Length: 241
Image (cartoon, rainbow, N blue to C red):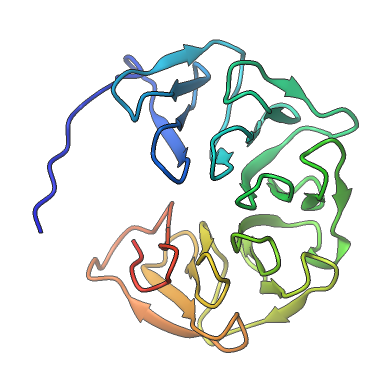
């Protein structure tokens, strides 16, 4: 199968895109920039408009319908939108410094991964409030979850463990597969059975699980240098990138 790519938007000189998210139909798309906020499309990527709020965002998340959107600011709090990205508000009581967010399909459950200065946090009320997850420690976390929010994955960076929850974040189990030295990305299939995480900065290894995070195996990338900054997995878990 051949794939054709079309250039749609430039961030401008000295700026670059850091992360993206998309609704289940593809109608709503969000792309985060390192310098000038969020680019949002509501017409399947035909056009993008710039939200000029001063975000420094890495990895936004979007509910299946596109109504709910979330992002963590490296230099600020968690932001949320409940109107398809038209307006955004900061979540009160949340400190600054966030790498990544992920949300359930309906947008009610959100996890935000920290940048080493805070605990990873979780919300089960559409981002109205968040609570900390002390079990994951004061370490950067890259996060993923199943469509219903039951199965969750958090992987520490630059070193630490892989943590798995099968009860919407109520409890977590640490797993330490051989060779894991920290992660820079994480993803979970729609049903939660399949999980994937990168091997960390300077590592070209991918770690994956096909039994809800109970056991893990590793595979080397064809590349012999560099490392992964993003990983993703489809609804069924059969295709990942």
